Amino acid sequence: MANISGKYCIVGIGETVVGKRPDATTNSLHLEAIKACLDDAAIKNSQVYGLLTNQPLNDSHRSYAVKLAHMAGINPLFATDLALGGATPIAMVQHAVMAINAGMATTVVCVHARKRSTADPTPGHPIRRGDEHWEEPWGHFAAAGGHAFAASRHMYEFGTRSEDLAEIAISTRKHASLNKNATMRKPITLEDHQTSRMIVAPLRLLDCSLESDGGGAVLVTSAERARDFPKKPVAILGMGQHHPHFSLLDAPTLTTLGGKKSSEMAYKMSGLGPKDMNFAQIYDCFTITSLITLEDYGFCKKGEGKDFVKNGRITIGGQLPLNTHGGLLSQAHLEGQLHITEAVKQLRGNEVEPERQVANAQVGIVSGHGGSLAMHATLILGAL
Amino acid sequence: MSKDERGRPTRRGEPYMDEPEAKPFWAACREHKLTAQRCSSCKKIFGFPPQAFCPHCLATEYEWVALSGKGTVYSQIAYHRSWHPTYQDKIPYNVSLVDLQEGGRLVTNIVGCAPEEVKIGMPVEVVFEDFPDYTLPKFRPVK
Ligand SMILES: [Zn+2]
Image (cartoon, rainbow over the protein chains, first blue to last red):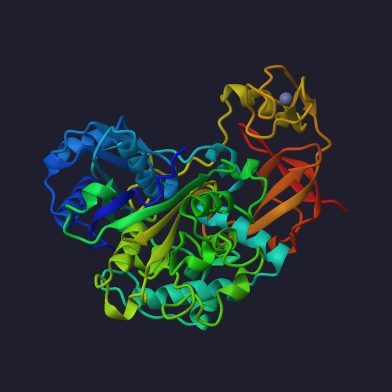
């Protein structure tokens, strides 16, 4: 199999204003993200041949991708909805690469938007999580619960403490404070974290991500075509996925997740390793998710995440800046779509506030994580 | 359908008694028996939710067997926020993942002790809580 590392690029990105968007709809946020992305790439909708998206949580139906393509004036030769929860935005980029590599499209837009902070009265059928009828009768309703199970077990196996998880929340908030398009910008302290109200023990409010309105999109094309676009292309160097279980009921472990095999695959494709990464945009639906993923990605040994995240290592200026945009914890929760656009901005250089630009950013890793800690996808991106 | 403050449907919070593969499980719970599917070919316990084919070897033949009801807490949490009106006066309450001795895992509650007394690795045994339309398996610490 020919290695496709570096042969496909992201040549356009779009981000909407995030936070509370009461006047927007789920549909309008998707369109806003697509338009921003096509403007950034200086390409017309008629020049886009593929569209990938994720079904809205409030409106599951047959092919949202095809509906959206036609709403956006795109007549797609390739389109589908992907459904991997928070691993979907990364999986979309991977599928775009595969479709272009297979000759089914030349340019593919990958778009994801959510309206979870304010109500969307647009009619629709809500999507199911799956297997909730084997969880809810015992009072387990929330993603916070699933991730609290992982945190509780990680604490039991490795002695991780709530104060260690706080390091991630504090650093991420610092990055959000430097990002004009972030929802929560007031810096927080260890005391703020430790006194924030318990949601599902051992996770406190400041271990939990936001519920947001907003969207993002990226445009993928081949490295040859990338030269025709105005912005500096960002190459897709490595890709991986792994989905080691579906529900909490069949998870072999909750302290090592799909990130281990997914990152191994991405490292192998790219010929790079953890030490080569200048930054990491690691899915952070909860602080524990990032801690486990940092271990699974080989930045430290299993169980040593609690020490790795200390002493400024994960803050801009440190060894491995983590979630330089403020992440799902403090910027906005759009299932990690903005982890990808932020990685592209860091690698382009000169696109983020100077205080949060990672110096000499050449290579970065991005993770997606979905479901009951079940789905995982990895991208390694590099400046060309 | 009732909706929450953001217009999303309220969670159901009850088991689906008419899920075809799971009907024998819920019927046995009604008689205070904990059961699981055991594969006739590889002899392994299927796990939950019940399904038509063995998840280990894809065999189609299985039997419902009575379990010992003994298990171990794999992980435990305490909900301090209610996501459903029926839990408003129960917080904080425990939810645990219990690995059953013969195989398989359930999301369940540890009862008979305070949430802070539930520990990972704790041996537990099944008890049943009857509701008007169904019976739920829950667990208590082994004395
Ligand atoms: Zn079998």
